Image (cartoon, rainbow, N blue to C red):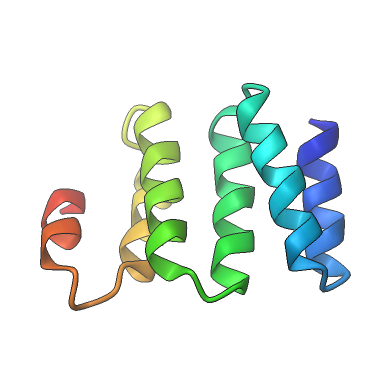
Length: 89
């Protein structure tokens, strides 16, 4: 939980590189869907929408198909990625 909080603080401070590092540590330490959602926020802030969508999709699956996480994943999926959009539908 500490790494996730550090990631959120770094993101708010505009330090995306540090935020990503903390978020990835949180995921690696078993932070679950909450850590994946923070990682997605960081990736989105960096303009890495496809990766952010995948992180949210994984978080949704970890939560048994959480509809809000799935909606967030769909919103970030590039429109030219038909395969990913189809998988999320």
